[in-house]
Image 1: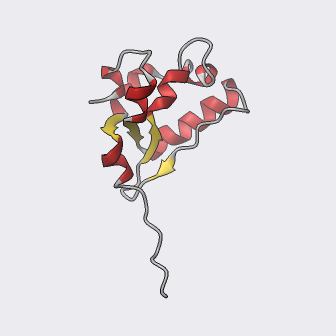
Image 2 (image 1 turned 120 degrees about the horizontal axis):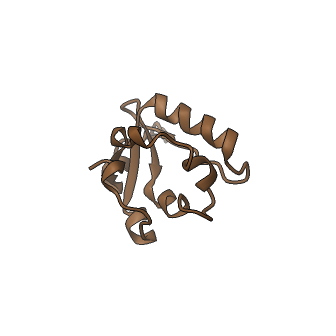
Length: 105
C-alpha cells in the first residue's frame, strides 16, 4: 500500500499502527517544503532505516489536514509522488531501524 491509497484524515489509532517509508530524495524534499511553507515549531524528522530509506510514523497524517500542525508544508508536496511513499505496519518499519551496538559487560 502507498500513501496514494490512503484517504485523509486518518485516525490516531490507525496512524500509530503504520509508518510512511520513502527514499532519500523525498526526505530531502519534505525538509525543503517544510522549511519554506511549514511552521518551524513543528518539523517532521524522518528516521534513517538500515536499507537507506527513511520513515515517519503515519500518525503525522492526522496533522496534514487544514488546521493541522504540518499542513502548511504537507499541502505543498507533489501528490503525484505519493505512490512512492510506502505505508507499512509499524512493526515492519521498526524492524528496519538501526540497532545499537551491544555493550560488553
